[in-house]
Image: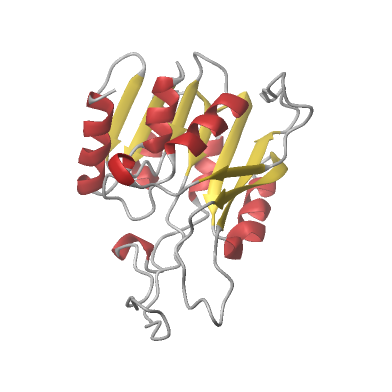
Length: 235
């Protein structure tokens, strides 16, 4: 699926980046949610409805290279470009280190706080209601930051519900469209190009297109690529 505002590829982001570099593709922003490598086997027997571990699929079972993609993708980023990378709290420092080694300047760590998190082992653990995203810009960049005029200041905290109802399309770690629209509106300009090398079900792309941005998306799993494709067809 390709047009002036939307290009999506069913392929490996680690391979396709060489084609993008060769073709001299430039993007303004990279907003992405790569696999977190946190799937694990266990059984929460103290829960009323126990579930067998945390399983987001084979792509999230420790074999995914979480960091080395960053260097090549920085090469196609505009001089005033930015990256926003969602991640588990376990990997924040490692991703920050890699970004800084690639001539990027980390500005903030964003927090997505879920108003309806999944309960787990509630008598022995805190409810995990937060995910994180690292916001970095090119060194010496004139970066984008749109603070709404009716708010005196912005906290790096985005509070929304998790995906449910008609919005849920079958991806195990689907991001809230409300969340992604806020991120797009604050950190990008209309008409700019947003790239997501780990597109999943396409939430970043849907947010981009709905807010008059162009989008390039890459997704390795055919199942999720087709889900994203259907979402774009329905916009």
